[in-house]
Amino acid sequence: MNSAANLLSHDPRPALGVGVSYEGRDPALLEMMLPHVDIIEVTPETMSVADGDRISLDKAILAELKNIDREKTIVVHGVSLSIGSHDGWSPTYLHLLDELMDQVRVRWHSEHLGYTRVDGEHLGIMLAMPRSEQAAELVAQRAWCLQQRYGLPFLLENIVHVVPDCPADYTDAGFLNAVARDSGCGLILDVYNLECDEHNHALDIQAFLAELDGRHVKELHVACGVKHNGLMLDVHSRLPRPCTMDLAQQVLREVATEAEVIVYEFMPEAVPGLGNAAIANTLQQMRQREWR
Amino acid sequence: MDLASHQRILLGMMRATYQPGAGDAPYYHRVSCSPDLHEARGNVLLWRVYVLERTCVLTVELLRQAGLLEDALQAFIRQENISPFREYQPLAFLGFLAGHEDPLVVSVSQFELALMKVREGDPCRYMVDWSYDPAPILQALAQQAPLPDRADPDLHRVEISGELPYLFEIKRLARDSANERSRFHTALTRGSRYKSTGATSQ
Image 1 (cartoon, rainbow over the protein chains, first blue to last red):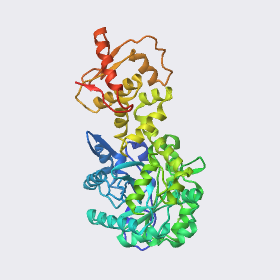
Image 2: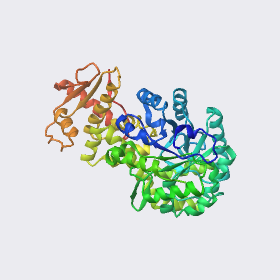
Image 3: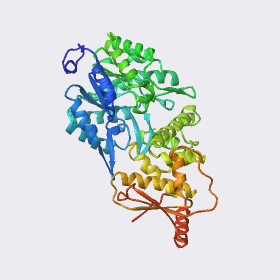
Image 4: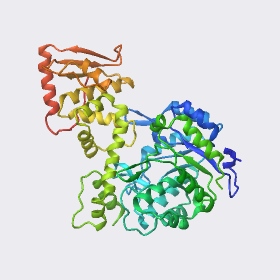
């Protein structure tokens, strides 16, 4: 059974739902995707409009989401909370999230385990946290606060490492385990990000998976980007490769046995190149696959 | 190393404003000469291009044709605290170019900025001065065609307002106005190269 209602059940091994990222303003694409998905993942920052010095959600997109949330489950996946910044998270993002939560029914919300700002200055990219005791404690405390603030599950995603790793107190998986354990938050495992880290920084994916506490993983992401100057980039511009899907299947069968959804992410800018039909076909194949 | 110091060093390295010294841990020296850092900086640039070429069509085309795009973007990234919100980036970039040393870049960018604002309901009336007739220049940029040859200066002023039928109107300037205009440009180009001064509005 693949339905949104199933996602709300307390079955310890829920059936796996299929989700897709959607940024609004493309009803033709949405119409082609909806029959194949249970969950729509939205990103508040990409649904926002500037109104002088203030930023707020686009009312037309909000109306679209209000229509969708009658038949599909909405989850929120932010990119600019900057949960790991030493000087605090982004109040602008939380303002958008408040606005969204007030108007749309949301199943859970999530962010990336990294930071995009330092002392209020924007990096222009997202960097992974140093895996220190101090960083784990800071992120866990903030993740706990977010769960209290919204009364909803909150998940954190493993991100790609764009610069080499620094000496650490934890392994990659150990850091995720510690943050989830100490905060009570869940995890998103982005399988393509693991592939990028394997290619760019020699991450041992199998050792990572053997150490990860899969009980925390509620959601998987699949995507595909490009190689540039020999490095794999996390740009979500292509259809997922078969090897990414196979790795996701392994994760679902052996590690993340309680995960509830697998989400295909792509950038709206990539849609003209990918084509609506190819995206819908990918989602259909994901729906039909025996993941477990 | 504590988290704040670590993040500040990486911010400086991402912006190419910090070079690790003798007192810094070997890790930062390793990052500094890694291909990853170079690639990450390139990605920041590409993301900006990706957003701006879709939102500041005329200005990006002009900068590309003039071979000035990368320099302008690098300066923008180094000097400005760029919001991750895509909605703000074109406004910030065009505003930043008000201080560019090339008067044509100033004219095109401030025209596009004013047009963007009045389209969004800004009630102000903006004036942007040009050294040449803007019509063939704007037409070429919109069609991604080579710019027409420009010989002698031919001073024009473009008025941009939500009250105008096509949101803007081009007027040829009389000599007296031209003298005013040259003072205006002197003010724009004096001082730091990329200091933003904004378009004039009434």
